[in-house]
Image (cartoon, rainbow, N blue to C red; front, top):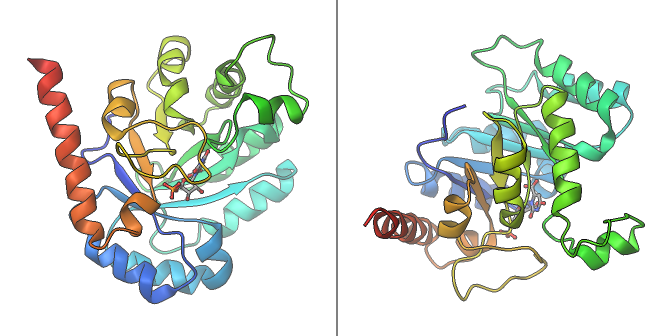
Amino acid sequence: MAPPDNPICVALDTTDPETAAGLARALAGTVGYVKIGLEFFYAHGRAGYERVAEAGVPIFLDLKLHDIPNTVAGGLRALMSLDPLPAIVNVHASGGPAMLRAARETVAEIDEARRPKLIAVTVLTSLDVVDLTTLGYNLGGEDTPTGHVLTLARLAHDCGLDGVVCSANDLRALRRRVPGPFLTVVPGIRPENAAHGDQKRVATPASALADGADILVIGRPITRADDPAEAARAILDEIGSARSAARE
Ligand SMILES: O=C(O)c1cc(=O)[nH]c(=O)n1[C@@H]1O[C@H](COP(=O)(O)O)[C@@H](O)[C@H]1O
């Protein structure tokens, strides 16, 4: 799968439809995707989605489905009647192999040219090794969640999914150990000096791309800026400068 031309995906985490649609319009032409998540979709559903879609920016519909296979398939099938279809949809890899295959079969009902990419969330970027241990995961003495991310990524790959959501910290191991092409969508992105907020496993845009990210999911550092389009352009410039420096 070829990496997208513009890797920036902006998370429109708001319940205000004017704000979401206004951001999508302001960012059109500057970013590759916008992301609609739980907050906005629970508040405004299809109508809100269609309003954001009017800006013409491809949409990552981030609803992180996680349930029994039949329910996830039913939920995804309902989403496959959205117009326009999202470019990307996701489920939780920890829903297990039967659920992942059911999800894959459901999106495959759409013809290949229009079919949304289906990706799986591995370990949330808000969780660190202490959280995973609290949740009862045996990390085999490792001090990062990467081993668990790899297990879930291989599972998603073997079930026919198009890629994963993971942290930048997992990318090098993932690129070595999971065969490509496999889309890597990476949240927890923070430009130098930006507040981390609730994110625990973070990286700068340039380092995430250097380590193999295809898409960078960025919310608050762009949406809370005085001028979101300018903030997105500054991140693209930073990425461009880092790439030129790496080539020299
Ligand atoms: O699936 C996601 O997009 C996601 C997965 C993950 O592990 N971590 C994560 O932060 N996200 C999403 O990425 C966005 C990050 O937003 P900011 O922290 O504001 O940049 C939010 O919309 C999260 O829901």
